[in-house]
Image 1 (tube, rainbow, N blue to C red):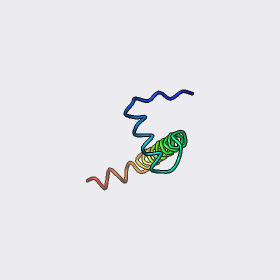
Image 2: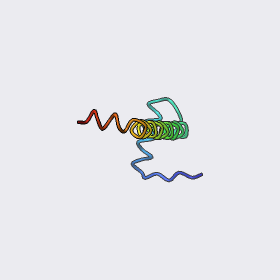
Image 3: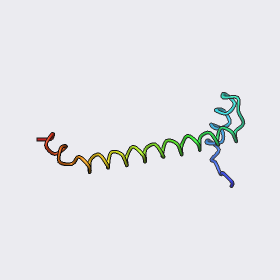
Amino acid sequence: MTLRLTDEERHALRERAALDGVSMQEAARRAVREFVARRDHQDRVGAAAEYVMHRHAEALRRLGE
C-alpha cells in the first residue's frame, strides 16, 4: 500500500511523530488503528441504540407523552 499525503499532511505527520518519538510509519499505523477502533465503537453503540429503540418502542413512546 502506498499512502499519498499532501505536503501539509506529510509535514504535520513528521512533526507529530517526532514529538511522540516514533517513526512516521508508526504514527500513521497508530492513526489507522485509532480510526478503526473509533468507528467500530460507533457502529456498536449505534446498533445497541437501534436495538433498544426497537425493543422498547412502546415504553419510549409512553415516556414521551
